[in-house]
Length: 355
Image (cartoon, rainbow, N blue to C red; front, side):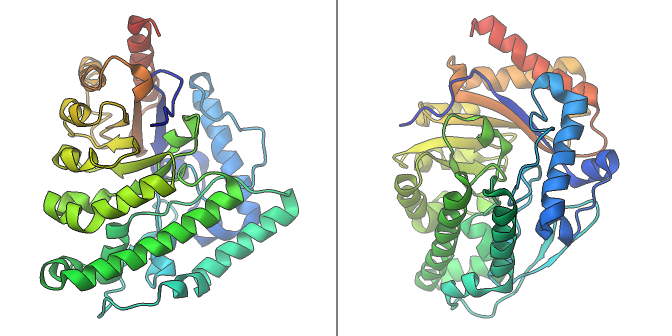
């Protein structure tokens, strides 16, 4: 298995659009995502804001560059593939795009239609415009996950499908997986990366990791995961190397034994509340990206913050190059001081380990 990180305990943070709207005046309307001039200008503005406030922490390093980012790499926002698969999307000034469930009345669809959709063709035009202006493109676009997209397309009926029509549901999931796989290769061929927009921690690694979002897997059993989705993860771990899973739910440890069957699971996002020690027993060589709770992060007294971070990092093992920290979607209530404190706790742990 590839060791993806040579630096001990990397840390990153991602702010909610309401934070950016308040502190940078950025509106997350449709043009933010598709206007080529805004793509470059707003991403640079975001880097500048990060540099001005947190430059000493290593954030905002590209503040002085006009980078042709194909997608919003400072947001946790997956919506494009849902739109490509027939969902409508609503845009807001201070929130991520909202996917409206398509409530498809059938499991049957033509997967290739996604790449003939207006949503995908608009992306192609954006990329070609940026390439004609700059000669290259960078970044990537959050590609979501198989079950996430299935829920967007079918709604809660997908769970009934899994129970009453499992063979048809399996074909449905495989078609979605085909769309994702083709999309990921397209983006990675253009930019060299696929998952910075899934988790910005990916930009800190020595190799570009492909990260499959399994946010909705907290809603299914381990048996359902093994039947419908584990085979896809196994296949993708061989096709996309290094490979990772994003599990932001509170119970990734439920899938620990199943995850251990993925031959090359290089990265795992460990959702807040996940049993880190149990996961480490099953996945001794996997990089754990330990997620802090963005809702509660500002409420902790400092001593409790230290305790929470230390306990989870220690549960991950002694090799700090196998563990990272992140806090994603912090809103306007988080203070700059709390961001500095998160990084400070990590620095103290690194010093104590002599790394």
